[in-house]
Image: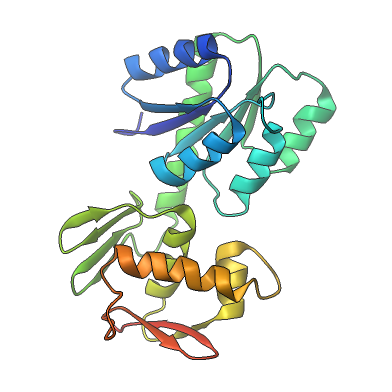
Length: 231
């Protein structure tokens, strides 16, 4: 197990949540849970998990919709744990981006083994990154651990804010256009709503203490895009 691996369980059956959470915590995992699709998406954005276990039969929305929303912004390892056993359901979930699919009922031994497989996706992602740590004056970006430090303080970013910061900081001194941001952060081929980009950028700047009239890290190229400061 990777040290301190964070697992988010999106599941409406409390007994199932408690059963899985107890087993995971006994193995050293850090566990959070959500009982609805909307709260699951919110927890994904706020708790910064490493792995997601997702039920499809949620009370407020279909789990497939949750999967689709998460895949718009993140490649986080995700395993569906569901009572739906048809081949078409399994294929649909895998085609939508699930890394694995496990049907209920299940043995805890098998679930733990599959969670360990999910951890390999985390390890593989870290190994393929050429710059594990991006260092600038006052800001450190640890891409292995998905951690951002500003003046030595750990700063939490949402998945969109994190992807936005990474695309800019990975290209210091280079102007990143609105269209590139739409494609690489939101996943749109065409330019997304400019207001959405501005809102996300404003939130990011505030969190990294770069929202003064004279920014230190992120500079606006009016009508074109944004540029991150040179190292």
